Image (cartoon, rainbow, N blue to C red; front, side, top):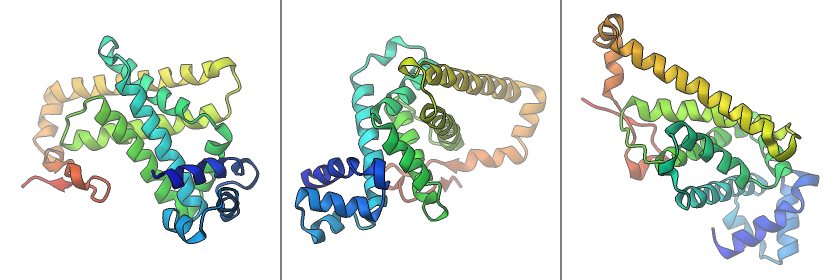
Amino acid sequence: MTETSEKLLDAALMHVPFDGWTEATFRAAVTDTGTDMGTARALFPRGGVDMALAYHRRGDALMVERLVATDLESMRFRDRIAFAVRARIEAADDKEAVRRGSALFALPQYVPDGARAIWNTCDLIWTTLGDGSDDFNWYSKRATLSGVYSATVLYWLGDDSPGSEATWAFLDRRIENVMSIEKFKGKFRDSPFGRTIGKGPFALLDRIRAPDQTLRRNMPGSTRH
């Protein structure tokens, strides 16, 4: 983000609790910062909606900084995932801004924007943790984590426990559920029936490839021939 866009976003956050991520908030931020409307519109073409997305990306960047600065090697893998999700939620230090964003991206016309933002967050988590998958697992990991992340954010928004302790306990339970499913999948694949299925319709999944790194935000993937 540019210095101007950062200033506008900071100014907008003062108005979000009252007006949400709306055109009114966008215009108020422009006025507060004395930014030329043409410049502001170039940075945030859809006004408040693009500001909400910029706020989400700011949280992503803060999460990555924290992950890079943390000794993750000393943690169990499941704990690394839980730590990453917690780091992302804690990066959003303005709960009302997140609540207003969740309401915005629940609107039918903005659901794709919200889903893409969550997917990119989970992609960043897996990538930062060193995920090297390039097959169907690339998608399943991000889809599963998107569900965990979304559920935890919603729980956090309604959590008033000290230090959000109830949220982190909820997160641990969700991660444990995911790990149990992964263990089951592993045992199933190694079973005689699983190996048989793997040679049949499920073999088609082996042809699915992760999208090219330079095109991941624009393409859903590819298939191996």
